[in-house]
Each structure stands twice: as C-alpha cells, then as structure tokens.
Length: 212
Image (tube, rainbow, N blue to C red; front, side, top):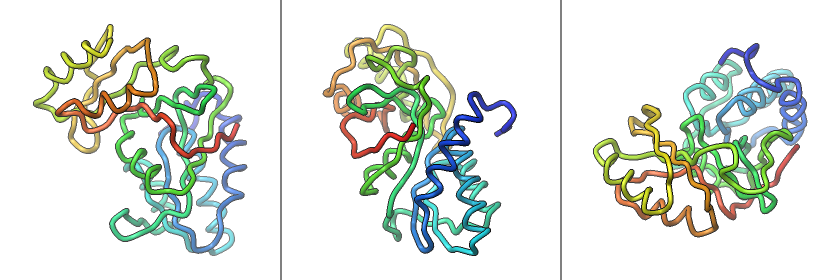
C-alpha cells in the first residue's frame, strides 16, 4: 500500500496512534485490513520495537501480515491462539454500530477475528458514518466461484438492484458487490444462508467499540 495515496491520512494516523496506546507486552491482537488498519499496524510495530515488547498478531490479509513481519511481530493463528482484542476499520457505520466492511475483500478473516475477540475496536473518521447502511457502498459478498450465478440470482431475490463481479480474494473465492437499499438486522443471516456464500460484508450486532 502506498501511504502517500491514503485518503484522510493525517486523521487516520491520529486514530492509529490512539489505538496503539492499548497495546501491552505479551498480548495477542487481531489485526484488521484496509488503510486505517495498515497505518495502525505500523504504529503498533513502532511501539513494540521501541519497547522491545513481544506481541502476537492474527492478521486478516497478506498485506497486514507483511507489515507485522517488517516489525518482527510474531504471526499467530486462530487454531492455536486466543485473541485479547482486535482492531479494524469500516466502510460504513450506522447509529447502532452496524457496519459494512470488506470493500478490500478481506471480510471473511475480519469477521473470524471479530467473533474470536472479546472486543474489537473500529477506527473510523467522520466520512464513514451514515444514517442508513448502503448509502455509500454496496455489500461485498465472498462467493465460491462456481456458485456465482446461483448466488447472484438469490441476492436479487433479497432485493439487490445491482450486482458487480469484483475479482478474487486471497482465499481464491470470488467477490460480488451487491447494491442493497433495504438493509435490516436479518439480512446478514439471509445472505449467509445462500449456498455458495462464504461471507458477507454486513456486520450487524457485533461487540465493537467505535474510535473516532
């Protein structure tokens, strides 16, 4: 990731430094993906290197894993390690702390971290807050490749007005972006129940704390 091309970079660095204050020696931390998480990973790396601390990271993308390795942060996994806390960014956040995430196509691992962490800190600037989910972004959906047509048809039945293929994930699955205007608390489960769906970018009712 080219740091110079990150939008709202200065605000995101402030958030990254604020979050790095929560780090302590010996912790296992879930690292999110996206530009804010990228900057946060750098700030955490600087801190643990300066203090000669040892922490373990559960990264959600190869890009974030690369930052961790750059700062000699040990890489863990969910089969063997318990997360003390996690952090991530978001693409949209409503007044109930429901979110759309995954425009960077890493929502499957991001959701796994969130489900395995007692608390996840979500770092967002003012541009990410919306009155209603779906105002600014479609819902990303990770799909097993041969299920694309079936999943697309089922998403239309759930109200998708536009579906765009957006390439492949690091897990070698396909990504669809579905434009959904009537998003309620039941939609995340309805999408997940479609055969062929690996995960969606809807995060409804998770234990998060918004940091802004």
